[in-house]
Length: 209
Image (cartoon, one colour):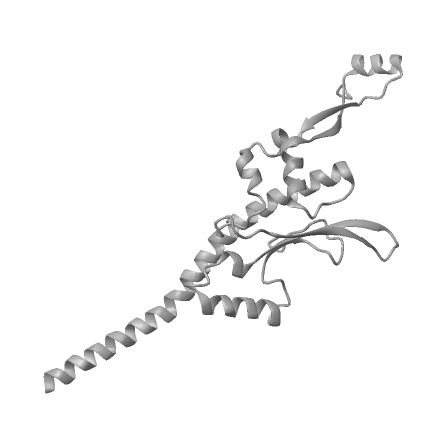
């Protein structure tokens, strides 16, 4: 009987040690995974933001449609300006003065080949999807315009990825519930990763910056 009691006590102690281990290790593992996944999501958001800024430079607005944005990146060109001569090039500058020309020339460049060399066309087409969702969940994208306090109409854009979309809600259900609750009720911030705002111009700033 004594050995049985000792055995049962050992089982209880082992179970308690395991529970304590889980309570300590789970938050640490969750934080590590959260940071790793956020990093990937942020990189994709940066690409979307770059595409939106290029789109705005051509059309003076942002777009809320991923098909439009992706086709723009893959197939369209943008007009830019560059100096013909270095301003220290006295001969070149004299030639321009003689011809009564400004020291600037226009040129066009492919959005894909200039800004998105690091992505294949297939990867550009997948920009709409939040990482870790098996290409099933798209970023929440919105765009429009608003009037500032100084009565100036400005284009605005916002792109969001909620935590519940890209974090492991099965392995870390309670941790994610706590994270979202803390963001919304204590920190008054968006429970996820985003850039831009539909409520005011913020130069498309990301909430990770």
